[in-house]
Every structure is written in structure tokens, then in C-alpha cells.
Image 1 (cartoon, protein in one colour):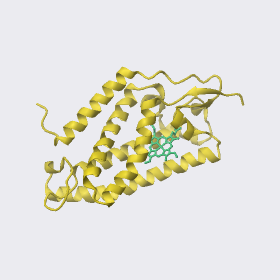
Image 2 (cartoon, rainbow, N blue to C red; image 1 turned 60 degrees about the horizontal axis):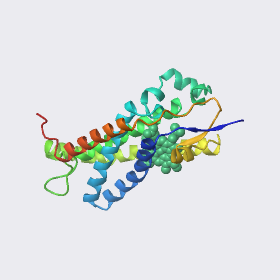
Image 3 (cartoon, helix red, strand yellow; image 1 turned 120 degrees about the vertical axis):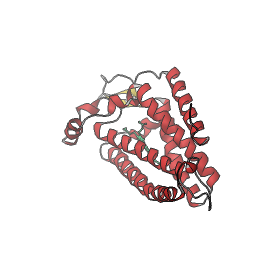
Image 4 (cartoon, rainbow, N blue to C red; image 1 turned 90 degrees about the vertical axis):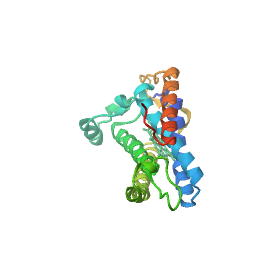
Length: 221
Ligand code: HEM
């Protein structure tokens, strides 16, 4: 089939993606090794990246925007039934969109739990730990440990899906996530250009959220 190289993923989507892929194992390692300083730094970095990616999901390029790739159950069922019209364009397919949402939500929940975790009398604590009682923090800490398996399970499904599309469907998804471009049918238009001003706004908001959380979420007024 005739194809042409099409711009698919913008730089912020790719940078956040590969940062997630590096930070999650690093979070696990620093947690296991009780390297709390690094665990907290990376956790706050992950929080910032997640906030940025979510805002970018409203302000970013076409393939970054949730509204352009999150489809209702009918589209997902049609896709599962073998109708791949929706994915003949570019970006996430209707099924992949669910995994994107699940991965982002799971990472956000995991970071959120971590912020409140720890025991002030016996070890390191997340920056929002003082906002909850010791017993509540204890429960949250256990959830933080258990929920990591949910994150790992979703990542395993994600990697299995990528392996399936790469090996069976012969789609070069990983290359596109690295370079930003991939081969598509000649009629498929390029992704919209990155609105860098809005990227800066998203970055500033993400920084502000992280700084506020790091300060223990003081009242804003
Ligand atoms: C901790 C590990 C990982 C996490 C949390 C993760 C998370 C995500 C998320 C949230 C997206 C959606 C991108 C966006 O729209 O912002 C995504 C897409 C993608 N990821 Fe990962 N990822 C991980 C590891 C990997 C690895 C190791 C690979 C490659 C071997 C990979 C390949 C891809 C590809 C190719 C896409 C685009 C899929 C598509 O075409 O719809 N990911 N990933």
C-alpha cells in the first residue's frame, strides 16, 4: 500500500511518555531501597508531568487532545468488532484511548496516595501527610503499596498491546512515539502544529501545582 510519512505525536506527548516509562521503574526502585529523598523528588516530578499531560490533553495538538481520541462505547465496540475506520487516521485508536486514560488515572491515583503516605513517628512522610491522621495515613500507605500492582498490571497490558500491534499488525508504533512520525495512507493529514504558548501555560500551571503540594497544600486565600 502507498504511504507517506505523517506527523503524529507532538514533542510534549513524547517527552512525557518516555519520562513516565523511566520514572515508574525508578519510583519502584527508590521505594524498595528506601531512598526517600529521590522517591519524593521523582514523585513530585511525576505529579508535574501528569498535571502537564492532562492540561495538554485539552490545550495540545490534535492527537494529544482527549476530545479527539476518547470515544464512546459504541466506537470501542465497533473497533473491537473489526471496524477500524476510526483508526485509519492517526493517533490513538478507540480501544487504545481507554488504556491511555487508565494509565494516566492509575499513575495519578498512585502519586496522590503517595503524597499522604508515611508515618511521622517512624519514617519518611509525603508532603500532604500532616493533613490526615496517623491511622488514615497508615491505611493510605498500605493502599499505596497495593495499588502499585494495579499500575504494573496496566503497564503489562499496555506493553502486550504494543507488542501485538508491532509483531502481528506490523505497525511501527514505538518508532512513531520516538520520532513523532509514522507511515500512513496518503490522505491522512499531519498532526496540527504544537501551540507552544499553550505548552508554556500548561508547564507553568504544572509547576505551580507541584510547588503548592510540596509546600503542604497551604490555603490559597
Ligand atoms: C512505565 C511504563 C509506561 C507507561 C506508564 C506508559 C504510558 C503511556 C501513556 C499514558 C500513553 C499515552 C500517550 C499520550 O497520549 O500521552 C502511552 C502510549 C504509548 N506507549 Fe507507553 N508507557 C510505558 C512504557 C512504554 C514502553 C516501554 C513502550 C515501548 C516499548 C511504550 C510504547 C508506547 C507507544 C508506542 C504508545 C502510543 C500508542 C498508540 O499508538 O496509541 N510505552 N504510553
